[in-house]
Image (cartoon, rainbow, N blue to C red; front, side, top):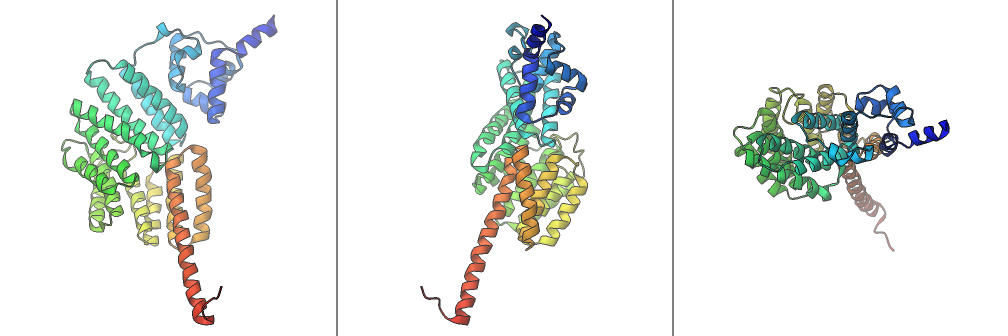
Length: 374
């Protein structure tokens, strides 16, 4: 009888969901316990089935935190409760934390679930919920941009377009600025730099009441776009403005949720100067960025890819490639697919160098030994 009971408990809905979630995202019990704000011994008892959880509110909270339907934890549909502002904020905060930990696939799953639930709940033009919807769309677009490649930028773009619509509806310049900024950035990412610049300039010029963090983030990304367009004077001007604005914000309290700060400006400078062939200047800025950014896995991988780019472009190919190989492994492990584009850029640069060296070598051999006959 006791064996039957133990077996039944080990197959409880909660035990199954916890095991599946840990297996899917390769998490330790300690990591998941920390996410759920419970003691690791409690989580072990849940997962083994030694303890059954009957608290409906706690089960509902776990379902939300793990991005699963409440029914999977044995909750009837009638136990559904509306999303409160506090609840939405807690999920948004948790997803941003997952981004900083470079747990990108988890972040994507959770934010898409929140967006689905929030859209289902909004039936009227409630300005408070619409504001939360815009913030959720911002985060959903950002996370999607992290886990997809450049040719899939439309996925993020759709979120930002909807964010723009909501921001205009509630007349919020800060949210509108962020939406236009990232729409422009996605167009640039997809290769349409002129169109991207139009959106980025609109963010700068048509949202006078946007807060400092949104404006600073916008001009930083506009500077990036100007560099891609070869407009170097405008690049320098925008980056100087972005650096000045970054001194006026608290990255932990800003509308960009820490994705724009003095550290991100320094990283942008570093990556930009490496593209311009100014390797020493690039590495100096990346050192400054490392000192300014929070020591999280997200920023660690981002800075490592930027250093790999700078080293290869500066001629230190062996050390740059070794660093790039480390980046590939971390990007694949953590789902930061967007940063893989930098590694492809390194490969393209090396391929171009190989062709140039091959042509130069052929020219030199022919001058020394005469034309090669086939």
